[in-house]
Length: 167
Image 1 (spheres, rainbow, N blue to C red):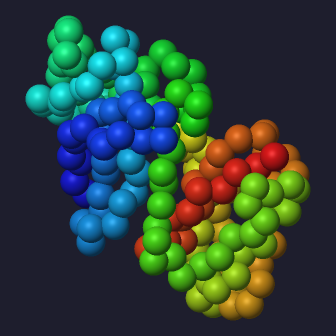
Image 2 (spheres, one colour; image 1 turned 90 degrees about the vertical axis):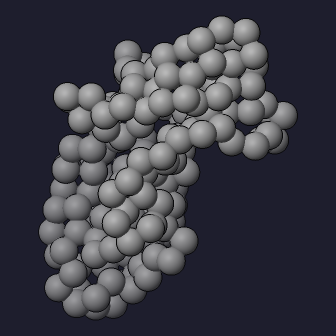
């Protein structure tokens, strides 16, 4: 895939954000992260480099100061613990997804509809670790989430990537 960066337009809070976006080889968005520099001024990203641990370093400046940000391979800020949606805007999206996952946010059971028969899936936590894998059948499938902690997960099946929230 490809990773690119820049600065995003004004959001609903009227702030501008630096962004890092990872795309698949076919051009689908895998993930996109928005970052607000410490000064909260308009950021510019001048360079992005992949690090030996698979993460990235972004270098840029805002209206006042230069800044450097280290993120992991999922675009999550280093030292921030989990990639918290209140710290980093999560927009893991697949607008052309063939499958539907509901309810989302989910309680103890997530229903998956529209998967091809014998389609394999992986459920990842926010750090990218596979916590569950298996095979879907045609029709409606159930994914048991009872043993999972509250939080965000990523469901991969075929070319579909869906954000799943466990309440």
